[in-house]
Length: 333
Ligand code: LMR
Image (cartoon, rainbow, N blue to C red; front, side, top):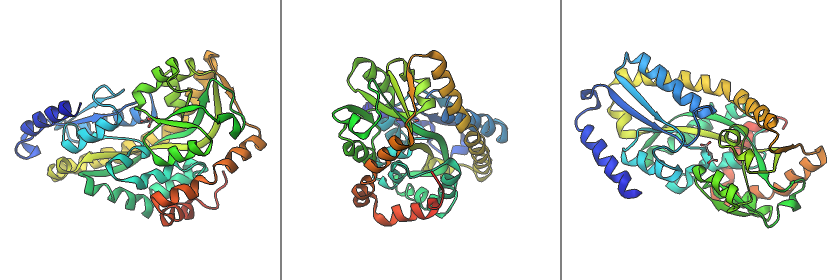
């Protein structure tokens, strides 16, 4: 696959010879792994619409959803090599390229709600985290929401003990690995595009994701139970190839920045509803039972996962966790 990415990158390099302005129109390939009718898919399509409008057609955005071009790990390589220009990987996926700090968003129960999340992403901590991407050949442009994660399996998972011995698919985040190991689960890192089939064939027993991702990937058709835990968060960092972005004529970049800002506002205003609608659709199919934990069961899950914070302090650093908690503390979950 790396060869293919390299080939695509050299074609991109040929077409990019000379300033980006020389091309007409300037093409932004935006690759992502989820369906178009998800919070990320909708925001990407909105960015396309607005960037093309605000540049008067001088920019053409080609959105490739559903891992059509690249899977999770490959898309980040492709961006760094210039085979695509824009992506929105989840916070959990930056570890393998050496930026583990975004994994702090993966800590269980760290965010009580999306309003509190904004304090982090729109504040100095959010800006500081985006800056870390510069050294990786990319610029972090925005934070996009998906929403809160739920657990799914073929077993009714009511208590922490119920998880023991199961195999769960995880994203490539050490925090998520620690979360599942704490529950006695065997975590398996896997690309998003492979999750449905792995659940269907029993390669893994369960997974965690948002209602929107579960519904659009039809995971509810191959999992008997969905546990409404809201135990974690999935959100994205929109990244663009740094050289490509820096080489854009200033007026074009400003127009794209404006489009990104508005697409972000739009996407983030829709994400909660997208997830609610997806949950309603899953319920309608009757294919999977939605399990709500009692307050006692919820408290037991929170307690069981507390130790993850100490485990991952070594990885992301206690000061970063403290900084994050300083923003979110005081809000009720
Ligand atoms: C996942 O891999 O489960 C998600 O990050 C996919 C996505 O982009 O929402």
